[in-house]
Image (tube, rainbow, N blue to C red; front, side, top):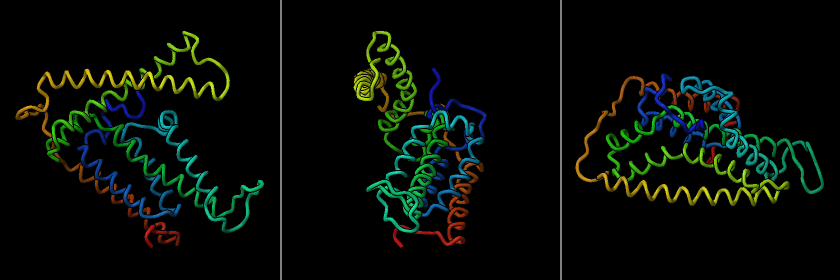
Length: 265
């Protein structure tokens, strides 16, 4: 079965040829800048520029909407909660008993929702354009991280897609046995919890077998050699410059429009 946006086979996408650490650095620059402000202009501009980068990662807006809907849902829930609890300033837009929304609270909710998407999207782009083995090579060769940590992270990334497929298989198997087919919200929650527990047991068993296998084969023992050397290139400078440019344009737009609202201001 196909894997979601975390799948990253080696492709011809432009970003796939960049060093994983350069992509992580650019994503970190964008994330830190977005965390320093709560205005909606900088978040909207950053999100729009990030969407323009999707083709460079081999993604399309349709793929993002189809596969990244949990992130969209989480952003919507966060924005709604913020609008519900934010100070009620500005013009009253809607009042339903104790629940009310004003222009100020809606603006705050929209800012949080868009900012959440703008923070999450660089991570999706990085994961979708990065082969896990290339990332492990970069972490071990360039950052000199411990081999056990790097190999554990590599195994985890490789198994994410398998867990997605197993979740779907468990769901079909339970439905074939007549489990979890009862109508109603609470029945669905109960069935989902049971399926999640089964998946957790499967994941623990698989991780235990993988750890024993890797230990038996000598992973992390002695001096390692590398089949491929992790290198930096001019493309990596372009990736870092792109991250800085997104931050500069987003913050500059917010400052020019007078909406820049730093967290510690």
